[in-house]
Amino acid sequence: MAFPSDILGMQRSINKMFDSLFRGGTWDEDVASSLWNPPVDVEERDQEYVVRVELPGVAREDVNITTRENILTVRGEKKQKKETKEPNYHRMERLYGSFQRSFSLPGSVKNDKIEATFKDGVLEVLVPKAEEAKAKTIEVKVK
Amino acid sequence: MTNKNDVTVVRSTAELPVRQAGREAEFVRPSTDVYETSEAYVITIDMPGVPKDAVHVTMDQNSLVVKGTVGERYGEKSTILFAELQKNGYYRVFNLGDGIDRNSIDARYEEGVLTVRLLKKEETKPRQIAIQ
Image (cartoon, rainbow over all chains, first blue to last red):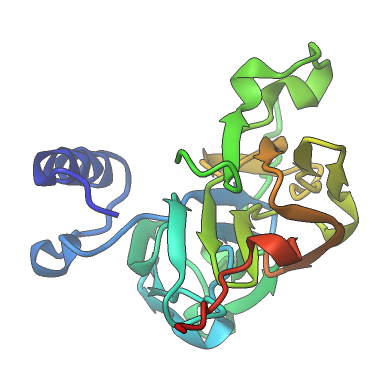
């Protein structure tokens, strides 16, 4: 789908602004031009963080998850599947191509214990918290 | 789209025929591709987060209605730090032209994508005309 490039440019700068404000992840300027950003949820539970990414129609082998300290990056590619070689498109609203999302989780995590599954087009990444990040209740005695 | 055999997308959630209550009032219009082959129209709809049994496809004489409710996903005592995913569901109506065979429609749902295949009527398929 062809968008005027100024709209895409505007979208990119807004995405970039949001990323630098809210996510600690850094945005690679060179690859950014061809990327789209799937929606993300981050849920914090007692023992773990659950990161969910909307990736309908994306094959599991086309998704790559990496971590560096407490920064989690999900990248990959959504490929177009069609039943003929020359389909006549009437409407094309779904996004295809490479995607990338990066964000920093609030506390330290166990990088080697991360697990991911796909459920109804949503990627679910379970990131266990490191011991020091788990909430500790300290009883304060009042004299 | 002037061809009367087209599958046209004419209504969206904002123009629901009946006022919806609760979660359904928040349903959004899902991203959709529509393409045509010599045999059929194929509609592909992204509905991430909807379990298979919560996808409903209904058809009457003139339209195909697609609806899906997103499943529960959060734990009871958790904190949501970031919430961009669709929370409620999807709703979209497609108007069907005369060229579609109402008796041969099939729908498949996998990986959060609904694919509906609408076969063309025999008389609307492209034909090779023999030159005398």
